[in-house]
Image (cartoon, rainbow, N blue to C red; front, side, top):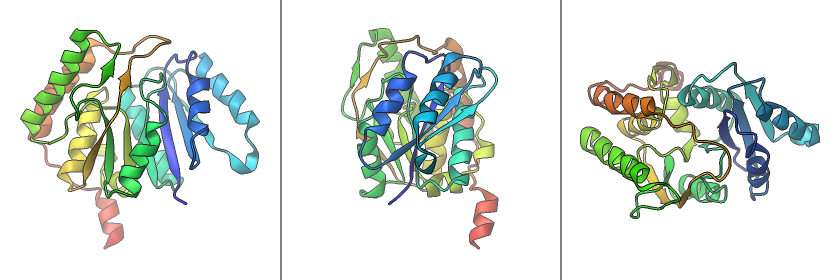
Length: 251
């Protein structure tokens, strides 16, 4: 059976973290969870530790990495990817802690990679029209046209380029030079997809319904979109190369 790891970054997500972990553990097929908490003195880390104590030592599915302060979404995922590779996981998922992504859809993303030939599966809000619930229209339009802008600049046929609900096969993360990833906010999501595409991997969009968080507060900011806007232009002219150490190890 393949090994599956869901990476969940948290920053002040005390309202959601216990419930999202429980939902992940309730899925068939044994999903492991890695919580990366960006404020180690805040509540989420202590909640995770309490749940860990209830897990049997021989079947530890919940893992925690604590970082000091808010270091950025991209760096959290990159840390998680490295951890996943070191611990032998076959499929690695990105998922928000706030239930905007339905944990049940993890099964569909896994199927797209494990059984349907995709190297990277994207939980897509826009591949079948617009599937977003409870967002203000201004935010929907900003997100939708941001992805249209990315497609225009980069030529990548992915409708939800900023999606943060993703399944990576191990070979994608091994082949990428993760140390070369530059964008740290939501532009990180664009850069990861574009890098995989330029390296020749197959990307499949899986339609999902995205629901705005019911608990806690959004961490979005204007700087996130500024980084993505200018970063995409830089990506267009950047040479994308595989991880040299990985390539040398296969030769």
